[in-house]
Image (cartoon, rainbow, N blue to C red; front, side):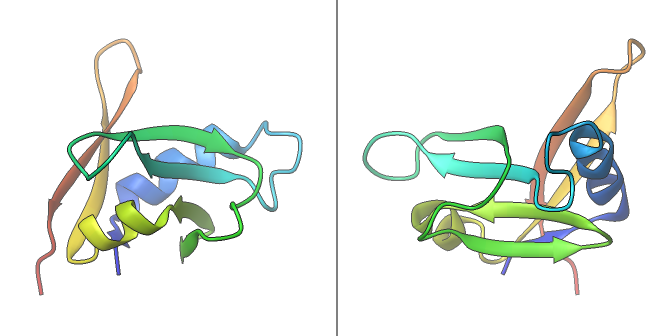
Length: 95
């Protein structure tokens, strides 16, 4: 299952803090079209029925079935640029 770094968890908490339902809000990673060549990340107020849910440090990530398979052995990290824009990075999970 996808894991979250502390940086990613903090970034997700920051992004969802002002959502209408912050207690259920998270980010959703979903596939575009057939296959896993393109994944998109959006804010979500709740998971879709088939989504896998990853929770860590008070942050929630919802994964559609394709994204859950593709990201099964990965970690999600986050960082911010000089202007404060958040970017997410998928990395190989370390033991």
